[in-house]
Length: 446
Image 1 (tube, rainbow, N blue to C red):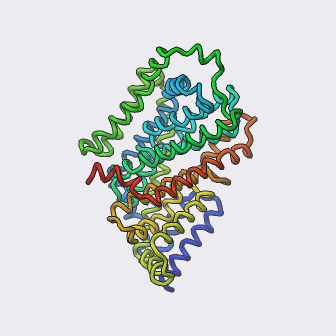
Image 2 (tube, one colour):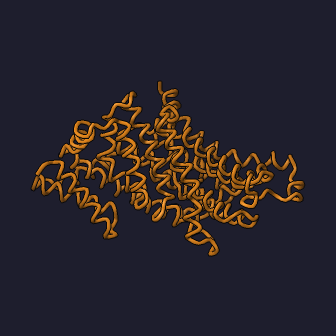
Image 3 (cartoon, rainbow, N blue to C red):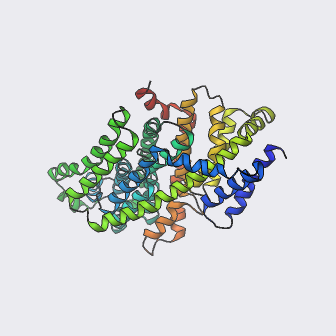
């Protein structure tokens, strides 16, 4: 049987088994080991064992539980309460101002952890009740929180970019720097949409009442700025020594954890319950990530042995005569389609063995390392879109869990439509102008 047919059979078997509802990593690992045994006989099962040893030797993997723990400590200890109060004071006079403040809150939260779920938990427990109480449209509110929380996987320290870096063998420091400008650009486009929409439809996001506006003094607004210092301190303590090579990725993640815990202790919210909940959730998430990476390595090893990447490259480039940009657009469309049914890690595991080497081999007029970094940002933006696209968007179900009963699943689905359009617009901009992602890493690492 031709290797191309074997690769197609592996993919089709994997997709078919996913319909059974079993764990994604279990299905992918099973297909990988079964294919290895069928192709190479006795000894083929060692490919899975080899992948396990490779995973255990990945020292940077220790950063994953650190970033996850940071996110849960911040969420459970309610470090963001003062931040939201700060944005409430400064943006309350503007139509849709509290929604704008919520996006800015999510930007700062993203700079303190690498997860979307932390932003969802904070936004749903702090911003959601306040925005609904002040008469904001429920679809506007739920859309803002879901879209804003997705920034956590693009703005560093992003756990998704760390996973991509491990599988693609790309430098985490450059990927983090590459995510900053696209992340801020997307947040700015969210804010522009909110301001314009609420300007023409004030009922969607009313400003503070005249009496409340008059009661807010400049001294109170200036004092509130102190709340914004914490995320900048944590972000700076992690990023500056790491970017300049003073610390490794793992050491920087430990610094971030210590800074977050110290911030919670000083605020008086770091309790035994917070520690237990954060530790338990961190253990569960970390184990899930490790199984996913293990499955990806096993599957990738079989693909490397088959030479499937070369076969696919030959199909697209030599037989179908597709250009690099056509292939890239098809890749992104496939990501958007898969994102309707799979989460970010599952997508990465399924396509990384094929897409990452393929995109690195295409000629985009830039060095191979830049292509991998740029593609990592494109992949992460498609993950953000996947978080919000029905029927199985991750953030959609988190929103349903946090939202009050009067917000229906239909409301949640409809609320994300304009924000998904903004994300697709941002994705198109980064594809058309790669320097939006590459300028900063090339500046720091010339």
